[in-house]
Image 1: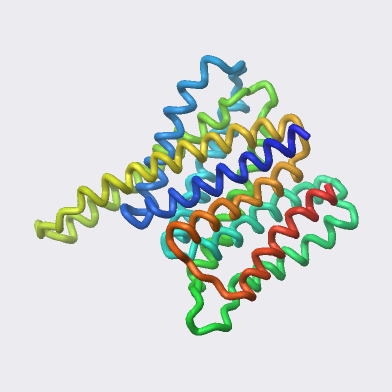
Image 2: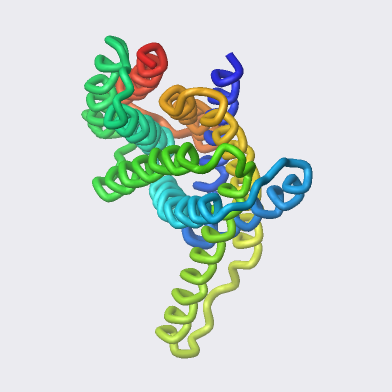
Length: 292
């Protein structure tokens, strides 16, 4: 029951984090939004760190570094695809993929999903197809680029679960701290390199002032990063107290938060067939839990 609570809590928190991160990526850039979010999350972790039992080890640090590199790719792709939109379609695609990857790893390890679990896999694949199929002219249409980015982001998110599960149980939040440090360093470095290259291309031309929009984007990224690290705390606790596949597929329900906020705030409209795809994606996640 505690694992279920952690999974659902991380799902809702992740959904809200993705929404704010996607908005931030539109106002600034996916790279800067990811970097600022990682830094904001790191500040939260450093505040919590003294109150958690953490055993330092080479293995714990290495898994943290690996998680950081993977997370930079995952969140960068996620924010980029959400910035392209529509959030209400692309978020469920990432969710399905983020559930399939840990489940596949579990199967390779010899875990058994049961009848429900094996039914869920084709259902999830059908869901991915349906959410990208838009028969109506006036419905929102995700581009092929955005869909591929969503699949890549979801796969990387799923791998993040696997990495955290492999970290030593006594390492506390060290892998998550390492993840944030590496993530922030990589994304800030990439951002400043790209900014320097862009400045050289402008050759002294003055750019229009964007400070108000950028400030709001920074704030949104900070909120998204804070929520994201809270979800990570729930995940690392969940994989240590329960089953990897269960916590992963429960967390994969996070589009509920993103879709709700996108519908209320952005007034995004989706086609009926896409609603079916989203529903099948959620149903597949539930079946995976039942099978686990």
